[in-house]
Length: 203
Image 1 (cartoon, rainbow, N blue to C red):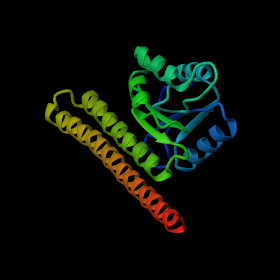
Image 2 (cartoon, rainbow, N blue to C red):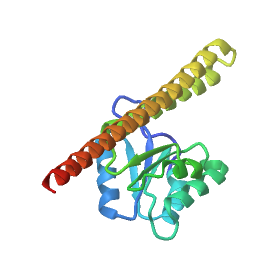
Image 3 (cartoon, rainbow, N blue to C red):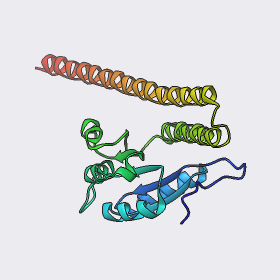
Image 4 (cartoon, rainbow, N blue to C red):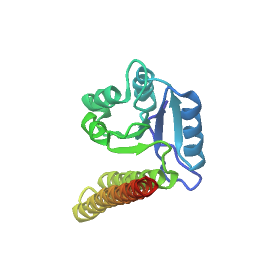
């Protein structure tokens, strides 16, 4: 298979995404959703198959489950990060497990709890696509205008700003989830207090 990026009907490069999940229905459903978003997608069903597929498919992004037999998602992420040819791949964990810290330590760039919010997932993928487009423009400028240093610098600056926007968006999402969790805990506390008062009155 060619290493050239797949292009859409407008001639723009699109991301290659590798979906990894031992739940075949889940993997195929995710792959279908991503194709409908306009991405080039391949689905595989275990960690070792993902490593083999990546060598041929050369994905820009890997969406992986964590709990898989054999090579789980953590080991898969570590395997990719240890391989020089795969280190630039964006790794996204989509799992029922909430241990985002362990996922980050293993090498994942992002972490979603199933079912993943399609809008938030697409926002990350679109940002990655913008980065790909900027990098492609940089390559074209370097090839066609080797002396256009200032333009290259401006394009690199745009890439950095896109990455910064991604991180800031994720930090806001995390903060929002923490606030929601605090509200739930407060509600539970109030319910417990009301039940306790009710029991005391009945006694």
